Image 1: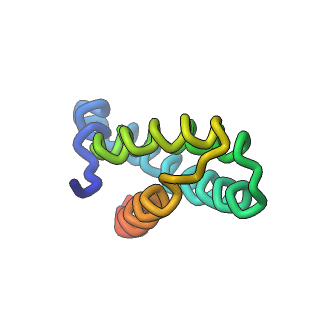
Image 2: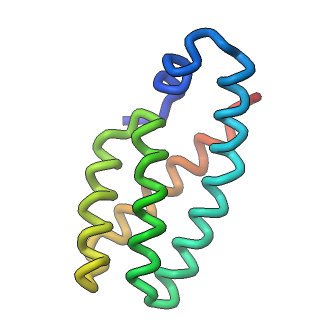
Length: 106
């Protein structure tokens, strides 16, 4: 499934200003949270990386990525257990979201 803005548009209910602000926050927060996750995973700070995944997974849901949200749940739990088995799949999701966010015009 590809990312979309359906949830944000539904939440905004036609309020273009709200929609733009929501998207601006997403565009600002996601790269910071993604960079923090990448730093923590590369430094093997798995507990911190799990916290990063917890924040990021909600953005997946907002962008209509339910399967990626479920992956993030599994990845978060695995990280809490010291396991990075889902890391490569999670990185693919991050790239997908990053690419999508870059295309959003506000």
